[in-house]
Length: 279
Ligand SMILES: Nc1ncnc2c1ncn2[C@@H]1O[C@H](COP(=O)(O)OP(=O)(O)OP(=O)(O)O)[C@@H](O)[C@H]1O
Ligand SMILES: CC(C)(CO)[C@@H](O)C(=O)[O-]
Ligand code: BAL
Image (cartoon, rainbow, N blue to C red; front, side, top):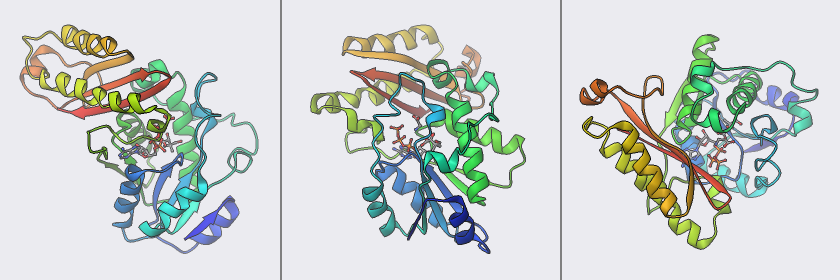
């Protein structure tokens, strides 16, 4: 496995290779990321994992500075999975000048849910993913369903820009108790870690009521928020949405059991966690 820090070296290493499979990450890897690498391996070409904490997708008060940088440990986890190249550019390498050209996804998808609470987040994500795609020129790229809205936004970007890249969504890997693995779980203290699984429990309750319009959506969501608040959480959103466009379902759609997803984001202490469950 090669660890590459510059774009020139990356291009040279990939020259002549067809069907590169790409796994973009922010590092501090866990079993969820490794499952994406295993999925990428199934596509036959070389596998590139990127590690880059992208300043553009963080708000000033968020955890950009605090975000764990653990390159050596990450490489030790990636090598046994058969990852061929780790692309870990510096900020200066990826953003040699202020990034004035940006990719702004449509507000209807990007300014709701995560985008409401992290304004500009998806512009930051799309801009860096567009750039990473130009660097790696993959045939396939793998993203986790844990970041459900991000996956939808990336799919839309690739479709609307006619980018010749197959986007694969990989299932969320969970700890034994059901907590979705996340780099940010590392911020949790021991008792917070025990509590953290409640986010997935509340989403299960929301999902269980999805197809019963006798229970009003607003009441279902208010109950979910109250349940978490009562346990010391500060929810940003806990909501049931249509899988097609992440807008709220009508009662008729709920009755007709259209594909839906329960999505949640909430802070436990100073740690913000997200999760979702299709229903
Ligand atoms: N538990 C998981 N299962 C599957 N994929 C995951 C999981 N967690 C993250 N991913 C995916 O890994 C890719 C890189 O994500 P990232 O490096 O931000 O990790 P993360 O654990 O989600 O970190 P954070 O705590 O910052 O959200 C994304 O496509 C993300 O959806
Ligand atoms: C896709 C990504 C690597 C872009 O910085 C990031 O948003 C992430 O890790 O999910
Ligand atoms: N996992 C999505 C990247 C972020 O939270 O910034």
